[in-house]
Length: 291
Image (cartoon, rainbow, N blue to C red; front, side):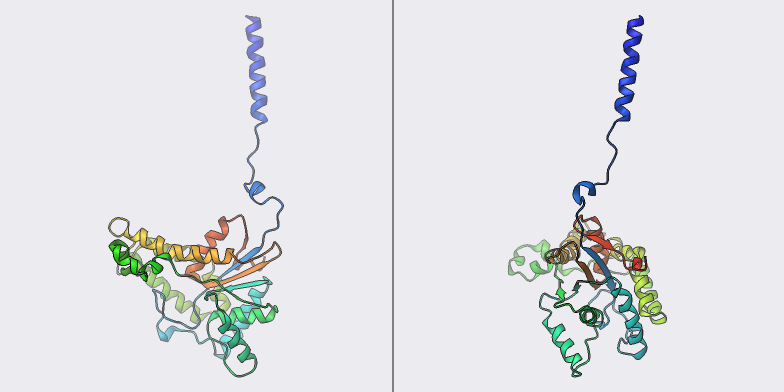
């Protein structure tokens, strides 16, 4: 009996010791990053200064900001000075791979022969290229797979793809879509009443960016019969942003690089998630440049 009790006591002590020596939970970046220095990425979500009218929500002309006005140019200098705190070594904008037209316009503007384009690619991107003496600007825009398929003659043999390409899966007259419309109109009024920097600080807050992405998966025709909405969204909008991310990922960088990514806020809402989850980059948030 005494021998059995002694053995049981030894078993308990051994078990407790084993439990106390279990490996502690570690940050996964211990394995995925280690002591590697990661390139930093600053995402800047914008509305399109030149108002091309290609987005689902189109700003009424009476609510559009004239980026060329004296007051807005003063505010633009303040906004660019704020972004410049990031000290970018590479600048990515919402443009195609051929960005020669941006540099040509910039050179003509420097020579006093043209106005700098109204778009944020020029008013922010090219001005910062000049300020930091960078030799290029990267156009990383892309279209989604569904768009490619839609213009492929073989699509005619796939009626389902043709049908989801033809339908619009963003916006509508349902309650949540109307709420989003009210939100966008509020933003437009906010931007008119505040400086460009204040508008960008609001637009680039986590909650606003998250809700921008939420617009695609809440109302409109996303809750369509079967998986039509999910299929269209994944093949068009989500796929498009994955391709944009892949374009950025293809830029050759090292750990000392600081990549400024300037895109429409709807894109930044998804890009933020992609960069946050990647062990290849260190994301810097717009509203944390003061910290």
